Image 1 (cartoon, rainbow, N blue to C red):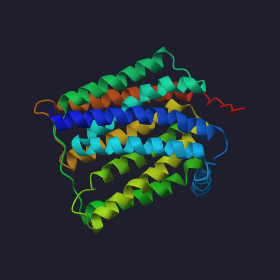
Image 2 (image 1 turned 90 degrees about the vertical axis):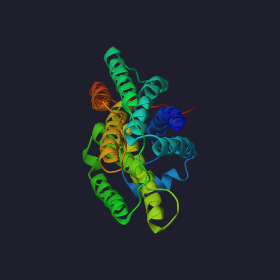
Image 3 (image 1 turned 120 degrees about the vertical axis):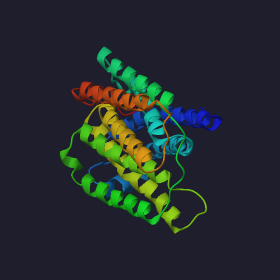
Image 4 (image 1 turned 30 degrees about the vertical axis):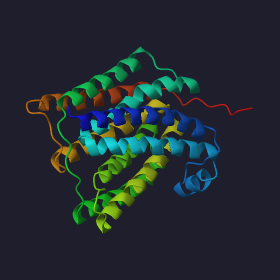
Length: 279
């Protein structure tokens, strides 16, 4: 592993820590009932006046900056899978909002961690920044499709909403790989796709955590934001794999995804506990 990859991995782990804590803070904010999540317009209009939501957004912004560094210096499959380490952080922090993980759930967290180690062991170099008209058009087609899918969000449970959020964060991560220099119209459009994907993902994730346990919404989100960029990165963006270590990448993705799915199924049976307001 090169020094750049080492810094990239450190940035990815830092973003996982921030994202894990921010997820629990976001759940607390949503469950106070002061920010409506049934409509994107109402959600945004209320959120801009809510200090707690602003604090969560700032935390996510810090995590995103660290995540962007990881995306530029690591293959997408490793940068995204490292975010799965936010699961144990979320699991530990969720004890603050009266959620508990049993032995089976902690075993699932362990699988996610083992999968990440396998991915790190087999990772190669990151592909170059790719920005062209076809890439940008594909990004914005994804934004439109995700927006249309979110209209059906009211009929989905916490896991389904988390999965939609995962698609949004996957699109955001892929779009980051299109942001570079020199700055031209395509680069600007790729950069604008990042917050567009993220806004819908943040809304879907908030709705998911209102109706289910934090981990139940988080696990399918992590699956979506890991697998899709992994495939796109290797097939289309030139992400490398260590010679002879392809098995480690495949096994790592499968093990980490299995852990996330098991955790989602374990937590999905638990109703989201109410969060008492201060005072």
